[in-house]
Amino acid sequence: MRRKSGVPLWGSILAGLALLALPGCFTDACGCSPPQSDGFVYGAVAEPGGAAAAGATIRVFADAGTGCLSRTGQVAEGTSLGDGTYSLTVIGPAMPHTACIKVVAAPPAARADLLPSDTVATVLRLSTLLDSVRVDLVLKAR
Image (tube, rainbow, N blue to C red; front, side, top):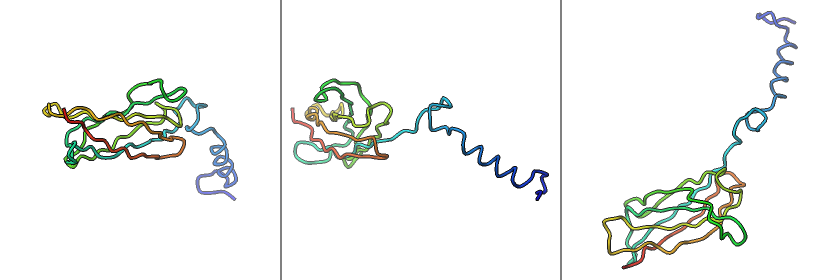
């Protein structure tokens, strides 16, 4: 049986199967980057009295090694919204599949009466797509 293109139907089917057998661009075989798993760190920043801390700078650091004591670097940074909430994306390939992270908030520069929050350590698992962890932070009074 021939189609209007002049290529036998079985030829089209074989060509399609051959394309499926080629390595996809999800592997290193073609020189492409592997797909990324994103993790999200979200939460709220508050002032010592409980009010929302708008404009605070939130930084996320990845740690590795035994006991997660070896800081590998900052992997995300953002600013809290008017209601004190924030949401940051942490890109998987920058970190191991299961990463210890440390999150800290600094007050806006205009707020000399406030100090940075304590650093909160937690685990973010990037072996599954779109993992997230909530980290709420409280700034300190000067």
